[in-house]
Amino acid sequence: MQPGLLPGAPALEVPGSPAGADIMGTPFPTDAPPLSGQVSGHVSGPLRTLPPAPASAHVRTAAPAAPPAEAFVFPSFTKRRPFPGTGQSRSAAAAWARKYSRIITVTDAVVVFAAALAGHLAWFGLSPAPLHIGSVTTTYLVFSVIVGSGWMLALHVYRSRDSRITGMGADEYKRVVNASVMLLGGLALASVVFQFDVSRGYLGLVFPAGVGGLVCSRWLLRQWLQAQRQRGRYLFKVVVLGRARDVRYVVHQINAKSKAAYQVVGVALTGKKRTWLDVDSTRLPVVSDEQTVVDAVGRLRADAVIVAGPTKGGSRYVQELSWELEESSTQLILTTGLTNVAGPRIHSRPVEGLPLMHVELPQYSGAKHVLKRSLDVALSGAALLALIPVFLILAVLVRRDSPGPVIFRQKRVGRGGEVFEMLKFRSMVQTAEDDLAGLLDRNESSGVLFKMQHDPRVTRVGRWMRKYSLDELPQLWNVFLGHMSLVGPRPPLPREVAQYGNRVHRRLYIKPGLTGMWQINGRSELNWKDGVRLDLYYVENWSLAGDLIILWRTVQMLRRPVGAY
Image (cartoon, rainbow, N blue to C red; front, side):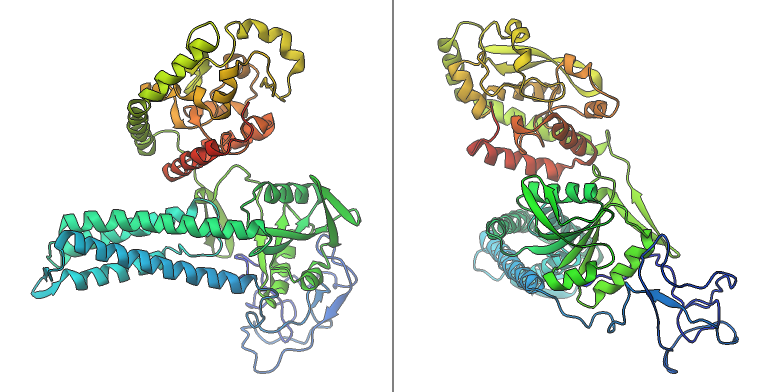
């Protein structure tokens, strides 16, 4: 986990260079005041003068000049260090990360070659089926070995075993799928170039089985890894550095995600001195400030430093911090203010020493939405047919439980502010809308939502239907008609939309969903602010792979319902 130097780092003046020259020979202003005491705006503390560089140092300098009267000095934050990369990890985190990567490699190999062999046996049997590649004749058994080897190479090239993505998030699965698609495309191109015809039936068996097996094996390994992390094992120990407000936000987000790979062992605060920092229900020790964070990392044997927000000294401070952390191969992690922008939309591009961060525009139309709509129609149509017996049973139970219609129809606001009629199994008494006015003073939610954990309007059957979200099943018809999507933001009421601010209106940029981020992150236990944040995150960063993961997590959530009332 050794970090490299940050792109765009300012050059360093080195001993032995002429006065006013940096390491590349670019002159500095010679009339600047000498450095002494403290560096204002960066890192305070006494300054040290480095000894002259050895004569053999390969440094390109400007034309010879008289020796400077005062040699360049570094802040005390920077000490004399060994050559970068020679340090060892301070804990076992790097060791287990390498071990876990090897485990993934072995399981990938087993799955890939098993899929290739199974495809061969299913399509050709035990016969050595010949394959003609130009003037060379081989067998499909040999070709299966080549496909398996190429598949393993593709998974490596796409860095699907990178410790920064394995164990959490959708990026790991995306890279597995992308590597497999790339390999299939490469085989198609090779068949044209080298003029050989591969059996489509063979490929139609091998690739679906291989991709499915890889995703399943990664998921199983992830479940094991997350179970270990919940026991406090296989976690990266981190120190969070920054202002108290920024540190609280970062630590809260880490704690809120039980699947996060980080364990906060201390915080380093800038500004006001204190001993503890309370975050949620946890009291974290303040182990240092911005000047002594490197020493604290050494004492705590931390694996990474997370810089939360802007720091005093700006980019130069971060650069020098990265240099200091090189000795122990401690990772440096920077947070950005783009809290609602996911990684796939962020790309870095260095331009001659200037690191630029490109943020792609979110896509609210186009081919991805056509595919999303196709997925909605296919899955909702199949679900409507398969669930007909369930619909009939629920309809009978609702009708027998309380007087009133079986289906509850309610106006909701869809994409672009379009109003549609949403369908649900009735879970409240027939006079629920009229009774709402008398319950507003008992609202347990924040913002524009109305929520009551023990709402007297909910019927007996409605209570357990709500627990397992069975009352939402008729919305599959809304999905099939195109009013809603399987995955999306929560469909709001018109009275809620009337109270939206400009920022919240972005929830209406795409279709509302039968399920979504709110469904898999606490449901009714979420406050208004967190619900909006999750919805906006989905609106700007959704993907088909992410939708499939949300659908899968929704099924898991329904087995162990949380926050449904």
